[in-house]
Structures are given as C-alpha cells and as structure tokens.
Length: 429
Image 1 (tube, rainbow, N blue to C red):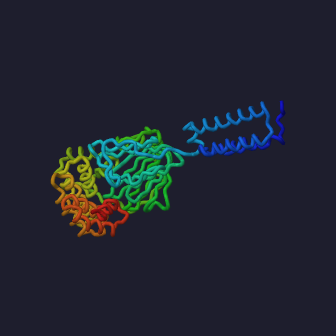
Image 2 (cartoon, rainbow, N blue to C red):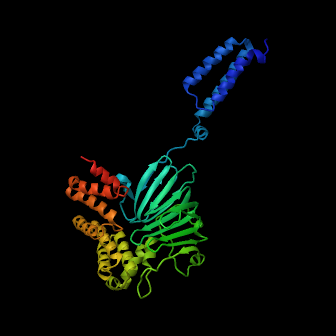
Image 3 (cartoon, helix red, strand yellow):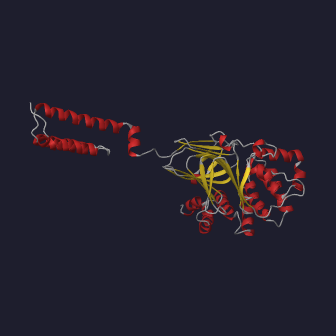
C-alpha cells in the first residue's frame, strides 16, 4: 500500500486547491469540465496508487458537490453574489398607470401603489402624481398636487426619491407623508420613521430630518418651520390615505409640539374676522371639513366674506370632491373680490381645471388656458396651462393641431411634467 507523500502528490493537491479557489465564483459547466480534465491529467502524471487515488477522487467529488449544492441554493447564491431582485411595481389599487407614468384615480378613495419588495405609496383622494422613473434599485415619484404617504422598505442599496413641487425628498427606509399645494406654494413633510433629506428653494443645501419631525415651507414668504412631535414616530407604519387628527390648540399632542427653527417673511393677508384655517385643513387632506363649514355658514355668505386664501382652499376642496358648481363659484369670487392679487391669476388657471371636470367642458377649459397664457406667459402655472392646452387640443382637434403646441412646450419647458407627452406628439405620425 503506497503512502501519500508531499513531493509525489503535490500536483494533485495543487489541482484541488485551485478548484477550491475557483469555487468562490459561479462555475460554468465548461469550467467544471476543464477542471476535471486537468485533475485527471495531473493524477495520471502523479504516481498515486490504489487506495490513495481513490481517496483523492472521493475528496474532490465531495468538494465539487458541496460547491455545486451551495451555489444552487437561491438564498445563499443571492447573498454570496450580492445580487437582489429588481424593484418592480406589483399592483395598483384605486386607479391606473397611464402613459408617461401618470396616475389616474378611478374613484374617490385615492390611489395606492405596492412594490414587490414591500414598499408602498398612498395618494389621498384628488392628489395628482406621476411615477417618473422605476429602476431595479428603486423609484422616483413626482407629487404635483395634494398629499401622499410613503412606506419605504429599508435597504441601503436602494435609491428612492419623491419630488413635490420644487422640492426633492431623498429617502432610504422610512415612513413619511408629503403634501404640496401649488396655489399657496406650501410644502409639508411629516416624518414618522427613519430619516430623509429635503432639498429645494430656501432649503439651504438640504434639510435633514429625523423621526418625529415635521417640516413646513411656505415658498412665497420664505417661511421654514421645523417642529418636533414626540408621538409622531409612534404612528402606524403602514401608509394610509386617512388624514391626521386636527391640529387643535387644546390637543395634548399639539401642546407637546415645540418649534425648533423658523425663518419667516411678511404674514399673508387674511380676513378681518377670525381666520377659518382652511389652508391648513386643505394641506392635511381634510376637504370634507372645509365643505361642511361652508355649508353650515351658507355658501353665499362665505363667497362674500371669506378671505383670498380661504376662497382658494374652498375651491380646491370642492374640486377634489367634484362639487363643480361650488368650485367654480369660489374661483369667480376670488377673481371678482381680489382682482389685482396674484391669486386672481391662480384662480384663472384653476378655473380651467374645474371646466375640465365638468361635462362637455374641454372647449371652455381650452379658452381659459389661452386666457391665462395671454395674461401670464411667465406665470406660476404657465407650464401646466400649456401642457393642458396641448392635451385638450389633441383630444378636440387631433394630433396634427396639437403638434405645434407640443413643439412650443418642449422649447419652453423641456423638463416639464408634460415633456414626455409632448415628445410623443412631436415625433408621432
């Protein structure tokens, strides 16, 4: 019976060592076959007899079987190689995804998006948003108006972001709610868990937030408010379109809120009587409370006495709840009572949105958008008005007529919300 000696059997041992080194990478069938051929050749060259040769072959077979078995296990293979499944949209409830990533609400309960790795978005009723990008590592969502809640599954390799008006929220794994009102240029973020960074105008290079903090930015007055609420991170983790409790001064939770940073400009004009706080209710998604107060006080009286901001909040709440006549009346009252204010131009644009919701109102909406663009070609809603004009013309007169508007839109707003639709029209048949 021959003995195994280092000098005689070093070639065979080197072959096994080389195969073990190669095992840290996924072996292909060709690599395995080449390894076996090399091992057979080296064993034949080495003077290994009888039992020793059988032992080496058995040991080699065990090593190869272990490597193949470990690599075949999906969980271990994924962990070993660092691979992870790509992020994908699993399902949508309460609406549908249109061309260009736009979300269309099918009822009055909001829209919910669920992703395969556990993350989810929930838009409150009437909110407008767009799934701007979906990649294997995350998603980029744009909130154009209204409020939305987000629950992002923690994962250091993922990249998630939310655009709300001119603000960008960069997230990892967290739970938070964002709202954006383009009419008042008011941004709000309530962070329940995790941490985020908010970038944008007056943000000073980025505002980091931790769990339990609320950030409010009023762009027109350059006002920034960060408040701390000890109970904020105790809320339920799953996002829902349900609205938070009213911020009443007598609430013990409200009393626990402490302002930690504020930079304010001139106060917004209000009514001589006690303000209704409808802008706050609107930002919180509590539209039914606004409408209930207006109905209780009498809509005719409200239209005559409410302040400029309250009238716009009433118009938005009525528009979201499809009370078209009330929304139109509130916007017309805004223009009639405050004709020289910037809000009068905002109300003109919003009249177009109201007309779009009314039966047979596409032509009327188109005329309103033309009026707005003539009065405010560089206004806050110029891009939106031109984009809506393009969409309406495409539906009323066909793509040939809308193509010129699409070209104008791309020239003025190449990165705007309607750029994808404009490119499709401009390069279409």
